[in-house]
Structures are given as C-alpha cells and as structure tokens.
Image (cartoon, rainbow, N blue to C red; front, side, top):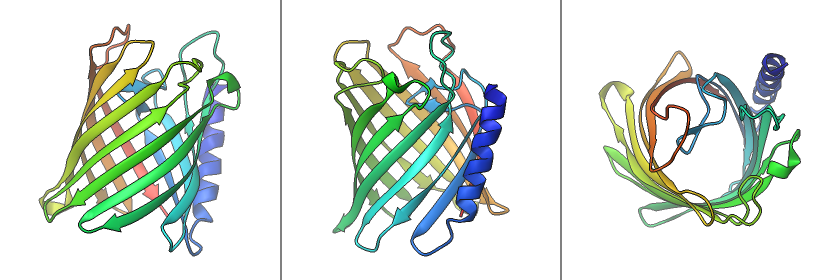
Length: 224
C-alpha cells in the first residue's frame, strides 16, 4: 500500500510541476534514497518521493506546497504522506539575503502530528562561498503539543570548479521536554542533463536511537 501511495505522489508531483511554468510559478520533483529530516530518517531508511510547487511574487512574497512520502516505522502510526504548506517573504539588505517563512506540516492520515513552524534565515553570498544561518521555532512539535522546539543551523556552500557545489552544515535541535541533539551534513551536488544530482553524508550525535544514524543519501531532482 505504501508503494502505491508513493507512486501516486510521484504522479501528482510530476503533474503539478509540468503546469508550474506559467509566470511566477516554479515546481520541483525529487527522488531520494532516504528522507532525512534534521539528521533523522522519516522513511525508515527507505527511498522516498517528493514534489510540489511555489508561487513567487515580484514583491518578495511567496507561497507553496511540498509533499513528501514518509514512514515512521511505528505500527500505531499509519501515515505515508507529509504535506508542507508555507508562505514567506524574501528581501535583501546590503550584501545579505533574508528569508522569513511560516510552515504548517500536515499529515492527512494522522492529523495529531500536524504542527506549525516559523523560519528565519540569512545568507551571505560571495564569489566562492555562500554562507547561511537559520533558526526554526515551533511551540508544538509533532504529537507533543507542549514540547517547544528550536532548530539552529549554520554552514555554507562552496562553489567548486566544473559547477560542483559542496555544502557543509551543522545543526542543533533543541526540545523543551525531550532529548536534544546535533546533526551534521556534508553534500556534493551538480546539475547535469537538466537534473540535479546530490550525494551526502549525514549524522547525529547526543541522541539515543536504535537506528544507525550514519547515513549516506542520494537524490535526483528536476526543477521546472
């Protein structure tokens, strides 16, 4: 059943993206070997399908929807789709790029996991490196509506020869009531044949998980 739901999501994503070429719209479809969310697999270390579209206004405002296949590997949680709905505003101030966004994570099959987040990011592009830092806050994380969560992430993307990009980042997920942890990301990407190929290594520390958190992931993305 989960396999067919992933195929269904893929068909929807391709359909959406194929119609996203009108003015102001963009779309994206992604095949991933594993959906890693802040260092943690949300597909049970299995492949996943993602896709959605976004509308960008000349004023800097934007909004969109992005769907992802998920598998929490919990017999009491029957959910296979995550839908991220978001609106935001981007602007520049001197050499810095700013991005503010409100996101609502929806799980149609298990609505008790629905939760909102608020995102703020700053970027500093240079000729060879684009630096970034962002913070994400939620007053209700997944099914624990009293568990405040704050995620901080910083790093940069090194623009290498032959149009390769090397992304390095470290994040910290803090919870009010449960165990916090750090996550690490090293990824190499390149666009070829109209597709973006990415290979990455992710890891987490200071957290007790049954699964192996040292993960190599691969993805192929098509933007429209």
